[in-house]
Image 1 (cartoon, helix red, strand yellow):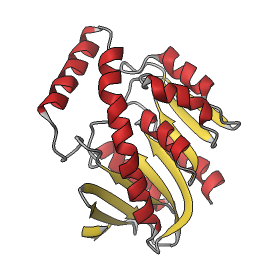
Image 2 (cartoon, one colour):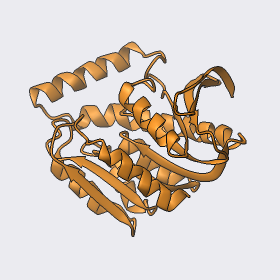
Image 3 (cartoon, one colour):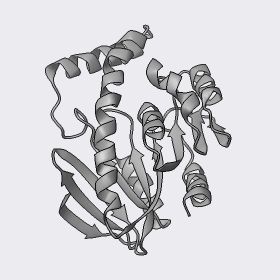
Image 4 (cartoon, one colour):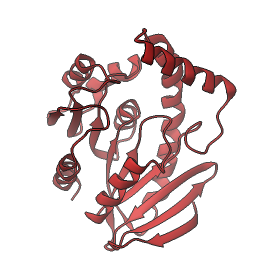
Length: 240
């Protein structure tokens, strides 16, 4: 891991960009250490610098957590193949036209998840070696399929917060019953991009004995700010 920049924010949080081989990432750490670690992802395809992710990361770090995020292959500033660009365009067109997207989604997102998981595990290994981080790890993010796969494959993850979940590949839907860590699931009731019933069915499928569903009115980007506060209280219960 090589840090390429750093700056101290007004709330005392230290924000550092890093590279880990070909993987670009950002790490936010609070003034106190060692701090529990939260792996924080955004929806597949969006960069780690997306303002909504950055706002969530900074707030979570100010509450006493180390927060790490990376750009998956083909996301953010990482190179995209012409084939990936065509699939993304086909997916956007089909969703806007109200056409079936399941097969397009499966062929694109499934491999993206499988390729992303080892990179997140490599990042986890590297960040946990830093003196600023403790050994308690959580996951929080809008890329639910990735979170499911990580929660199943990575025993160090002790709690998870997922957003939406309407479109999740079949493989991760089948894996959902193997997710047993405490779970907080956020659902926007009027989310135009995530079918409500699919998200409810996914929540029902999770194998966790402790799982909580928060549903709020509004579209995809309308999640109330207080859910971020509640999310940190959820992490406090399980990581501190």
